[in-house]
Image (cartoon, rainbow, N blue to C red; front, side):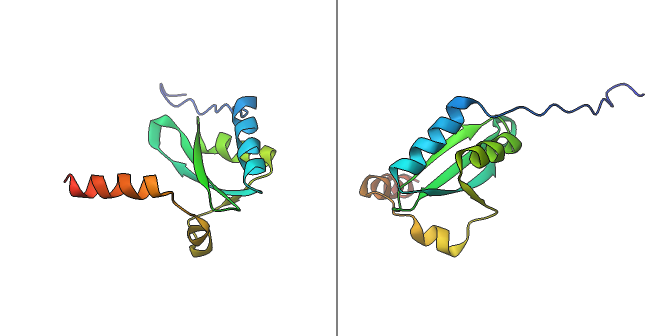
Length: 106
């Protein structure tokens, strides 16, 4: 075997803290759906959209861990940002204000 060609992979299991956080968000907002986004070396971002329109996010070490955590927490993972999911999101006024400041500051 050539040097550097080790293909052994290890599958990490989601931490109980991550699963608990996902479950808590879903229970506070009447259920939730999620989208897993790869963010490079940092891992994966789980963007959660509650059934009431609230949204938040959690970080995981990898996309596999993020998907496994969502499955354990009972959260449906969407493959991409579908129109119905985006329309469900209700950004707060504070978020709109912070986004407008970023545009004006350029």
